[in-house]
Image 1 (cartoon, rainbow, N blue to C red):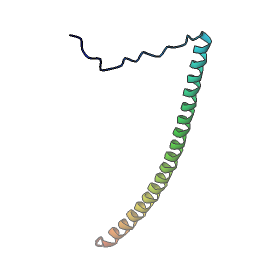
Image 2 (image 1 turned 30 degrees about the vertical axis):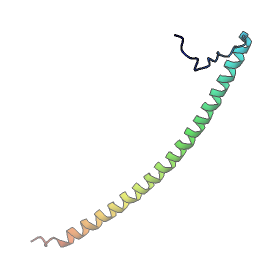
Image 3 (image 1 turned 45 degrees about the horizontal axis):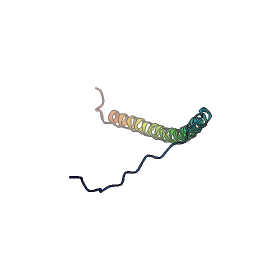
Length: 89
């Protein structure tokens, strides 16, 4: 017993034949697009790298100031420690 027809079969679209020049043109267009996207990605990466450089410089300056502050505190603690020692007899 035949099954009822429930779906319509849609054929694949027919491609027009391409010449080698057409394929080359399409490949060159895809390459150009890829190069443009790569240029954009490299520009974004350079911008991010510059922002990182600025942040690291700020961190370095902050750590340098903190180091100087701790050095000053260490000298004051040494002075206090020496002043609290009993006199040598």
